Every structure is written in structure tokens, then in C-alpha cells.
Image (cartoon, rainbow, N blue to C red):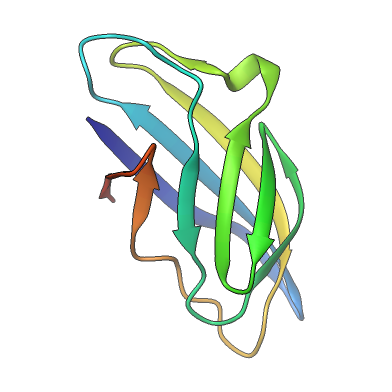
Length: 105
């Protein structure tokens, strides 16, 4: 019932800008959500728009901002963030939305 597109929009030295698009593939709107994922190489979110992150180690849990709280049926919301990185910056491999594993592209 969900899909996630993750991309690095910019990368510099020890930091990067990321973008996460959450797609609601269900037939009904989704109001209120939590997106969970884990960074594989110790990256950290330092600032986010479209959601509020909470990070514990590599695990990140994001709750929506007021304007992204509802994802319409067949629609999507976009989150952007600034993060720090180590020597590598691989993408997270698994995203869950309200506990359901999403397809990734």
C-alpha cells in the first residue's frame, strides 16, 4: 500500500541533501503516518522539512508536518533533509510506513 523513492539531491564533503517521496498506493487517503528507515553507514539527519525526524543510532522515525499529514489515495508527499555522512553514503534499503514495508525504487 506504499512506495518510497529515495535520492541524494546533493552531496558535499561530510554532508548531503536527501529527498524522500512517500507514495500512497492504497484506494483510500492515509491521514497520520510514521515512516521508519535505517541508514546503513552512520548518516544522520540534521534538518528536515515536510516531517519531524527522531533518530536513535542509525534508525530514523519520521512523523508528518501539518501540510504532509494526509497522503491522498494514489498521491504522494515529499520530504527533504540535510544530513551528515561518513566516507560512504549508501541509501537505506527498507522503509516502513505505519509498520508496513514499502516498495522502493
